[in-house]
Length: 466
Ligand code: F0G
Image: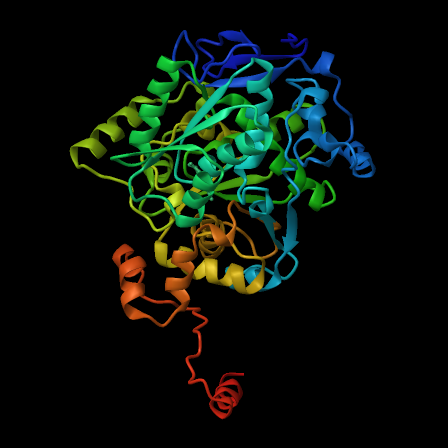
């Protein structure tokens, strides 16, 4: 293990501030239990003084660490030597201008961009973080890794294990809460898949206990090295916009790792003088999994430099328990009750002058259909970002001419069940998959046309529907 000269871990609580070497693996501060950050001594790390520096990396793509959309920004996450970085080619993603989607959301043409993180090897943004976690895990010699997951983290972990053969994967999933595309990945990649009775939050509690007792490396987003990788999503958004920060970043919120990582990315870029303006951040909950919304917008919980009143959170969780309130949304990726990165997300909302909104499953499915029709497509949770943009536009908080980047976190093919139920004309299927979640209409359904196996009838049908 090479000790880092420039990086260390630090508790995010200003009242504690305990520090740890990067050669240690922690998922919380051992002194006070708060979350940990990876921090850098920037004077020693000496990052570039202009983001355009990173454009040189495009000509060095034969080097896997420069090909990687994570590690070509190594200078901004230098917790390991670049030669020691683990990559399977993550981060080759696209920022697509999507004018049809802009029109739907009420934005002017040229103002809405979709950041397609579904183009990652395992089909979701998680690979950005997994390459960070694997780099750290390898440096400390970990042999087994585990996570609790609503499906994408587990698919990513399983893929990194199967491709790199560096560790064995153990994945914990709740019962019946995982989309088939994601479950099939974990199984096919050969991960030990433990399905426990309960939901994601139950699985999260258990996996922490198991990792503690068996000395297994935990790759959920409480692992601060995961979030270092996820910062690079913002670097690529900036890159796609010619290094000019957008007005808004809109992201779905589940366990709140992404929003936390984005806030950290922007505060570091501002601290280093690499950007002059920090975009505003909108975190979008599904209405059926609205913990952050309730805490931030209804109860007024704030970071306040780390001194905000967290009793409000304890109180809210107690009420949830009393009322047996459980998250329930079609956007199964973000069906989460107690987001583990809550405190870091509150910090990000402060840094980015953020807002939080909730959107219904109906709005999510309609936005998803619009994304598919006007872009490359996404899974339900990802479409919360577009539904949230439309809502904030309707409220006048986002202006028609604001430049907005919506993060599409997962690939369309992750959850074919929801998509087919929306478009197909099968009422029974619609009711079972979508109606049970309160979706009433398939406003933008592209119905398959049923025709007899007869050339004249087929031609007639095409003419009728064309
Ligand atoms: N979108 C997708 C497609 C996700 O899979 C997740 C989280 C999120 C959004 C929320 O991101 O947690 O950073 O706020 N999926 C996790 C998983 C929980 O287990 O795959 P977040």
